[in-house]
Length: 276
Image 1 (cartoon, one colour):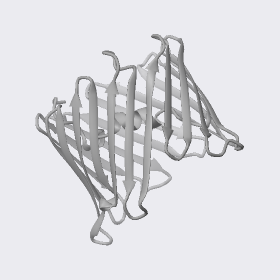
Image 2 (spheres, one colour; image 1 turned 180 degrees about the vertical axis):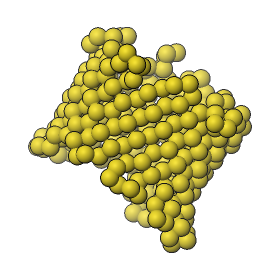
Image 3 (cartoon, one colour; image 1 turned 90 degrees about the horizontal axis):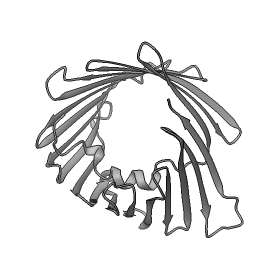
Image 4 (cartoon, rainbow, N blue to C red; image 1 turned 135 degrees about the vertical axis):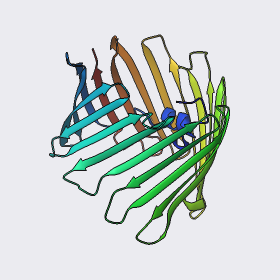
């Protein structure tokens, strides 16, 4: 695809990933393998509280097409087809889930050197149409997103944002919830590999006058071990330790404690992902 401003969903994603990705209180075990036919198979087991679930997924790539199929323990079947360059500079994604026949979605992404446009149609009896667009360059991007409900004949969401990227930092401002909230974030990379970074995010919800300020970051102890942490003004402190036990296989230990209610038990999570 082009080296343009990227998707609207990319605005603020770097800060969001640093503050939320891999933080969990579940126990998760994942094993990935590859068949001789080139199919990637992944089996996942998750224990959340007293409930255990699992799924098996398969991915097959051929030329400009990717097919993903996932079956879980609740007999749900999720399927996604991704096609690149059916029309030049486009990506088309079709997905559906059985037995939920109203879950079908069709997404088309168009990439240009100075703009990106995405249209998503939820294939229900009364379709919902989401549209987003960004303009700019890889350095600065302006974007907006809107959702139209054909049943009510009105917009059910609209969001606008701006993202600025520099070699050692990234900043974004997003106005969301139909103008009821605003979120600003800043990420600063502490090394050239971008494995050690500091992040700060502040959000405000105008209808409730609620402010949330979160700081965090990641630090590469060595080429195999990484530590992440976050703390917000409500006293929630979280931390993650990730270690590559063997090449491509990662052990993740996560935890969160409420510093304003230390009598409560901390939330602990454990994840093991094994890859060939």
